Each structure stands twice: as C-alpha cells, then as structure tokens.
Image 1 (cartoon, rainbow, N blue to C red):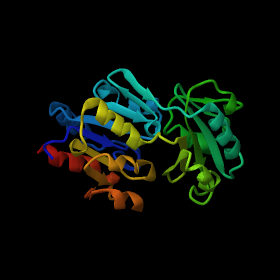
Image 2 (cartoon, rainbow, N blue to C red):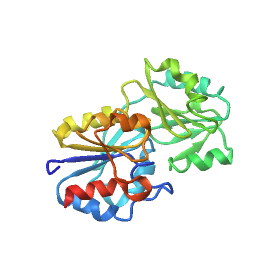
Image 3 (cartoon, rainbow, N blue to C red):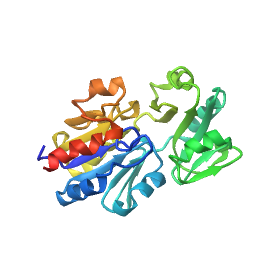
Amino acid sequence: MNKIKLIVTDLDGTLLDSNHQLPNDFWEIEQKLFDNNILLAIASGRQFYNIINVFDKIKERTLFLAENGTYAFYQGKELFVNTLPKKDAIAFIEIGRKVPDAYLILCGKNAAYVENSEERFLTEVRKYYSKLEIVSDITQVSDDVLKVTLCDFKDVPTNSYLYFKEFENEFKVAISGAIWLDITSFNANKGVAVAYIQDLLNITFNETMVFGDFLNDYEMMQTGNFSYAMKNAHTDILEISNFVTNFDNNSNGVTEIINQILI
C-alpha cells in the first residue's frame, strides 16, 4: 500500500453519494494525497466542464479523464482526445432516434448537444453536462465528437442497448448507469485512458489503485493491482475487482479505503 502513486476513481455511484455530493472528509484526504505525492485522477462518463466545476480548487493538481476516457486533461493541458468519426456518430444518431423513451446527446469536445427540450430529459442531462446546447439537428453540429449517449427512461439493457449490441465488435457500447448508454470508438474507454497515463508518468500496475461501480468502469478495474469495487457495484465489477470497499458510496466508501493507506 505504501507504494501507491496513482489513485483513480469514478464519480457517480463511487466517490459521489446519491445526491451527487462529495464525502465530508474528501478535501482533507485529498490534501494528504497531495502531501504524499499521490496523484488523484477522476475518471467519469461526465463532461469535462462538469467535472472540473466540482474540483475547481484542485484542478491544477488533479488529472481528469472525462467522457468515459475519451478526453484527458492535466495541469492546464489537454493530454489527448479520442474522437468518434462523425459519419459513425451520425449513423448512431439515426438509429437512436428510433429507440422508444430514449433521448440523444451528442457529446462534443466543446459542449454537449441535444435536439429535445423535454424537461424530464434536460433535468437529467444538466446533472452531468455543464456546457449544453439545444439545437434543431445534432447531426449538423460542427465539433469533435467524443461519444454518442442515450438517456433511456425505459430500460437500457432491454431497450436502447439492443439497438446497438451488434456494433460491439467495432465500437465500445457501454451501459454507464441506470438510464445511460454510451457509444465511443472501440479503443476508447477508461481503462485505455488510465493505461496511457501510467505509461506517460511511469506508474506501474502495482502502484495504481482504482475505484468503480458500473460497467463503464470494467476495463479500468484491470489497470491497477489495488482495484476496489464499491460495495454497491454491479455484479460484473464485483467479480473482476481484487477488493471490495467496506462501505457503499453513500457511506464514504472510497475515502474510508484511501484513509487506510495514509495512516
């Protein structure tokens, strides 16, 4: 444990509680991580602009892996952008428009774009996307595409996922939450992003600790020897992780474990 150099954590369902709040002891523990030269990385399906708002006061020393690993930012610099070809994004949008009870989000580098203004949908989207534009046709947006996301109010596994399952051999199709489905380039996921950071900063598998709870964390959980599934995690994440937190995300599950390595 005393060899840990990198701690990577998901946000929703992991570091944040059900009200999207940080643990009460987070800032104190983050300061200890910094004092001990342990790099904190936030890996989320959220938009970069949304994440950085949460961690604004430590943004200069925190590493951000946004949009499920398609965008990396550290110390004021963009490290990489893993885009989805526009023609493929348009094809997925056209399919997505046929999915009942589901709404599309085109996740760009500069903003997120939607073409539906239903309040129920916008209420959910604004929780995760701070820069949001409502347009008449998202296929006409001029921006680098990071991912296509569906907000599915019916049931992701039995509804929207079935429309995109056939593309899994060519693209990354990830169920990212109870109502979320994300589609990115095949080599774009949190695990690939963490591996890039490890190589860039010369940090090993045995020097890495990761925390996750849902299927979009699957590859990431394989990047560190100290892989902790949240107590509230999806069954597949529990199975692939080396450890399980003592508490869930509503009871400071992440910071309780981190505090152990700082004592």
